[in-house]
Structures are given as C-alpha cells and as structure tokens.
Image 1 (cartoon, one colour):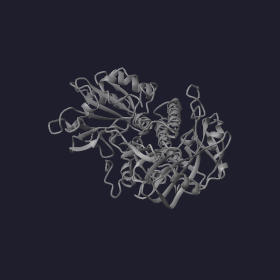
Image 2 (cartoon, rainbow, N blue to C red; image 1 turned 90 degrees about the horizontal axis):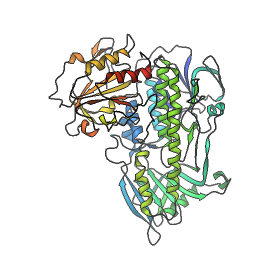
Image 3 (cartoon, rainbow, N blue to C red; image 1 turned 90 degrees about the vertical axis):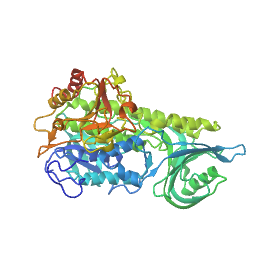
Image 4 (cartoon, rainbow, N blue to C red; image 1 turned 180 degrees about the vertical axis):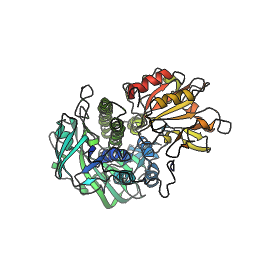
Length: 590
C-alpha cells in the first residue's frame, strides 16, 4: 500500500482527507443500496470531481443478508477495493464439497468428496459471509472516501424522465433529483426498470424450495462441509456452513407446484422446512435450536434484453442503466446472484468515470449493456441446468458430482469472457501470453518486488482506482523507454505519469541479480517523489513466465482494464499496435 505521496499522513491510511464536495449538480444517481449499488457507490466515492448520490427506500442499511456465497473472482475484486483481508478473517472458507446419495437400502451415504476449488484457479478462496457484512465494508469505504458518501435512506423513486439536453429527472417522495446518469440497482421489482418499460423475461420451474439459517445439533458428519444430498424419495438438500463456526444454511427441496400455482399458496411454515430437512437427512437426526432467518421461493430464471435505456446499436448513448437483480434473477443455490451483480457495477463504474472525466466518448457506455447482458444470459442458462441437475431423481451418484466439477470454474466466477469488440482485442498475439486470456480476468501469479524484495501477487497491484495497467513482460529487448513515451502521450498535462496507464515491468532475472537505473522510475505527486514499485522479478518457487506461458524471447504486453479484465496482448516491439489500440479506446489523447 502506497501513501505519503503528497506529504506525511498520520493515522489510518484508508481514511482519506475530505475533498470539497460543494458541487451542486449530481453526476450519478444510484438507486438502491444492494450489493450492486454499494459496489458502484464505493467505486465512484473516491473521485471528488464526480458528484455521486445513492438513495434507498429502506430506512437503514441491510441487517440480515440473504446472499452469502462469495466467489474467488469476487474476492479478487475485493482485493482491488482493499477489504479482501477483512472478508477472509470473518468468513467460512469452502475447502471441500461432499456428495450424498441413497444406498441400496435407501439411506443416504457419502458418495464423493472433492476440493471445492481446483488448485491454481485463483490466489483467493471461495468463502461464505453475510451479504450485510459485505455491505458494511462498502459503507466504510464510502465514509472514508474523499467524498464521505452516505446513502440517503427512506427515499423512494416513483418515476423518471430522460430529457433531450442530457439530463435525467427522478421523482422521489422527497422531491425531484436531477442527474446526468441514473443507475437502477433496486432489485427484482426495480422502479427504474419499470420506468424504462424494460420487462424481465423468463419462466418458472414450478418447484418450491425453502431456505433457512439455523443453529442446530445433529449427528450428520458433514454439517460443517458444503454438502449436496439427493435422497431416494424425499427430495434434495444443499448444506452451506456459515461464518462463526455454528450457523448453517439449508436449501431444501419442498414440492412441485401445480401450473399457475404460487409458493405463497402453500402457506408453508418453518416447521414444514424443518420436517422436510429431517426426512432428507434420515437416518441422521436434526435438532433445530434457533431459526435465524427463513424463506420459501420458486425456482425461476429471468433476464432483460438490455441493461440501459438505449441498446448497444443505438446512436444515442445511454443515460439510465440497470444492474444486478434489476435485470437478472435466478435461483440462489449456485451462489451467483450477488457475485454477478457486483461485477455488473464494477464494469459500469469505471466506464462512467472515464466518460465523466472526458477521457472517452459517451459511446463507451454502450459496452456495458453489450458485455453484461451476454454474461447474464450465460448465468441464466447455467442456473437452469444447475437447478434441474440438483433436483433430478434416480440419477447415478457420479452424475451430479461430474456436473458440479464441470462447472466449478463458472461458479468460481473466473470463466467470464468478454467477446472481441471495442475494449477486447483479437487473439492475434495470444501465444505470447497463453495464461492471460484476452477477455478474461487477469489471472494473478506470485512475483518479487525488486525495490524491497517483497513477495506479492502481481494481480494485487490492480487497484479499483480507474487506471489501466500495462504489464510489460520483458523479452530479449528492452522497450521500456518507447512504452513510457506512449503512455505519456495518453496522459493529460499536469497529471502524474501513471494516472491513466500504470506500467509495471516484469523481468526474467532474479531480484538479487537484476540491476536497473532507478532514474527510469517515474516521479509524481506534489513533492515529485519517485515511485519505486514498478519493477518485478520472478518468484524462484513459482516463475510467472512459466506459470502464465510468457514467450521468453519476445516478451509480452498485457493491457488490463480498470475492472481487472485483459483488454489485449501485444508484442512489446510493436508499439504502433499498442498506440492504435489505445487511440481506439481514448482517442488521440486521454
């Protein structure tokens, strides 16, 4: 972590000095303080020149969260926001998953036990933590940010109007709010989506499930392991241990619904959920001491056709967006809802920032709907297959386990891949860095920081601060000076040299054998201090060049977007190709 750049700062380095936030106009209005809304708000709160407001119809913050699974990819994002270590400390870590099926006598027995996440998939774990605690971390970031952003609770949106002159008027119970951009993160019953007249499309599976967080005693041996149980004729049960060492969540198959029947028609109670769980667990016993939270729901998947007021092919750039449950809903068992929603917001956040700072055309905002709607549709398809496989009767015990393992990369959140387009380059030079797939997230690997010999994860240098990263994996020829000039040409005057594109060089020699002229490191800040944290060397126990398939002769340039996705891979010696790609994104200058 770097601080003191503009002078000595005592106290907590995460508490930033307050900025002048007297700007009257609202640039971005966020509706809803769910996971998507708070991700977007926490991201934008760090930019004092962007006035952000966030409103919520509830009277206060979330106390009891319903989403709890945090994918490896989401933990990578939390690292960029600076609080992954806090989540790690509190959360339940999902290390293994077990599978139970009926034996010849009809009693459930363990039929499989696997690692939950395959080795090397991510440096971050798959964990379980209450959505409300994740919200707490975001709210702390907002309070400590330069803008001291706080949600405006008790504010209900009743309508909105998009004006031709580039502003949006939002009607609330406290009066009108005018903003340049509005983002509806207000859930499945989104008022913003309804105002845009964009329907959620999909279908229900006519199946009722219950979910409850409980404190209980049992002789079932895998109660503290993620466990999938398929009984002979009593239904299926998914066990998700919770943080804190004692609580556990049960997802319980209840009954098939008749056509046009709603789960509310069944008048199900907590006792019904407990009875169903006991039947599935038999002959093991379950004594529920306390029900912390419970609900019943219907299996279903729905998604909107677009995530903004204008489509990706429209001439008019969008002004109003929807994110998270406002544009995609599905069953909770696969644990993807909160994770995908936060990635929606991260994707949109840096694009809004870039446009509001005048560094890209508003047309850039079309890429949000184009990229994220396709990802949401993939999620809907996956969720439908996963739900059906989980509830299937009489299948071979290995079938569901194989299905789980086949989709493990997807549930870890690392299989998202953006198609070639405005922000994602072609794979002409992918062979130079086979482990950094263009369009996928930057897959971190260990390195040694040259200046202080500290072992770190290279991906942890990609902070959620709006900057692009250019990782220069050095081959036989040194191209540092030429690349530095290209970066300078895309940096506005009176800005730090790495304020738009932050270049990090990784050489092939060990840190004790590497020699460099430290005058090549950039100077920046109010005191013109030299940033020594720009050069990295391989970890002798895990060489990044081997781990990520870097061509040792040619080297590679890996350009990474502010949301941690690989935009392009290019040869270091072909600087014209880099210039052309950056110009396509930013124009002639940033």
